[in-house]
Length: 130
Image (cartoon, rainbow, N blue to C red; front, top):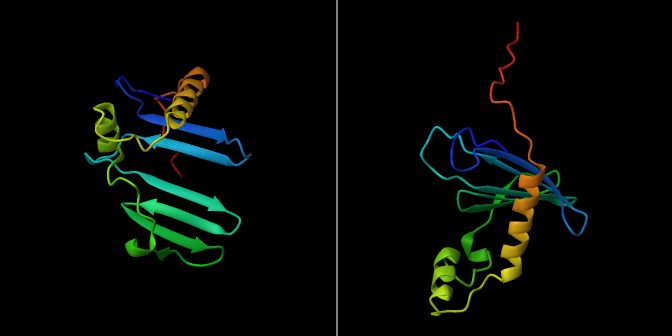
């Protein structure tokens, strides 16, 4: 993890073994030249991959090309906005749709990452081909 003087992590890379033995990697890159939040999720398995990027879902079977899934064919979330649901649940206006165990597990992962974090040299120089 590297904060580069900021109040939040600018760079982080985690390799995680999940409870079922699957391996996951999580990367955070905070130096986008644009003032925008971009999130991307990719899941690979023996049969292919699923990608979520810019609010679109792509399915790619092994050896095939990515296919954009039609929004009508995707399951509907119980709430259009999990953040609004969370705030409304605190106010007692609706039931929280995310179990507390998800927050506990996310916090445990974050704490383990901080405990294992080693500073990254910020004076890395690019390799130039000659």
